[in-house]
Amino acid sequence: MAQRSSTGASWAPALAALIFDVDGTLAETEELHRQAYNETFAAAGLDWYWSRDDYHWLHRTTGGKERMRHYRDSRGDSAPTVAEITDIYARKTVRYGALVAGGGLTLRPGVRELVAAARAAGLKLGVATTTGNPNVDALCRACWGVPAAEIFDAIVAGDDVPNKKPAPDAYLRVLSLLGVEAGAAVAFEDSRNGLVSALGAGLRVVVTPSLYTGDEDFTGAAHVLPDLAAEALPTDLGLPS
Image 1 (tube, rainbow, N blue to C red):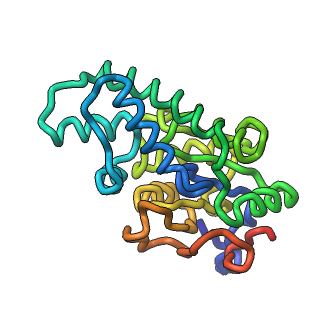
Image 2 (cartoon, helix red, strand yellow):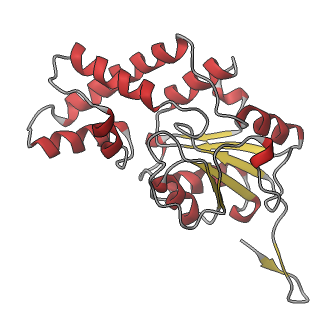
Image 3 (cartoon, helix red, strand yellow):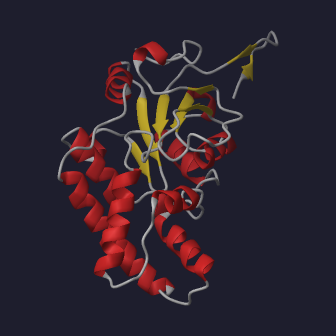
C-alpha cells in the first residue's frame, strides 16, 4: 500500500517479494489434475467422470475436496461421504504426483526466467495456492529438478489456512512468513478467485489467464497478460528482468 512522506507525497515501498499461485500460473496443470481425478474415480468404483465442460464449471470452486463435495451435492448424491472424499482425494494426489513425475509438464513462458531474475535481485519468493503441498513439490521437482523449498522462501497451501481463495488468508499468511508488506509485493494469478484473494490481502496482481479461466472477470488486476515472457512484462511494477 502506498505511504506518505513528511511532505505529503505518496510513495510505494520498494519491491521485495513475488508471490505465485501454482496451478495454471506456474504451469498448465489442470488437465493433469482432471486426468488424475477421473482415473482415481474409476479405481475407486465411483461412477463419476469429469469432462472438460464439467471441470470448467467445477473450477469455480477452489480446493479439490470442496470441488468433489460440490459435484456430489449437485447430483443429489449422499455418497461419497466426507471421509470417503478425503480418502479419494489423498489417492488422487498420489496419482497426480505420478503423472507429473512421468514428464511432459513445462513451466509457462517466462516463469523460469522471472523466478531466476527475482532470486538474482535478492527478492523473496512465495507461493499462495489452494492445491496441496505434495502437488507444489511435485511440480517443482518436475520443472526445476529440486524440492519446492529450494525455489520458494515461503509456501502456503490449501489446508494451511482456515479459508481457501477467494478469501485472502493464504496471501496474508505468506506475507507474514516472508516479513513483507503487501505494498512491497506483487502476486501472480490465473483466476478470478485468486485475483480476489490477492486483492483482499492488499497486493498488486498480474493475471495470466490459463486453460480454464480465459472467460473470467479480471477487473482489479494491475495487468492481464498472455504470459510472463520478458517482452510482455510491465515496467511499472519494478519487476526484475
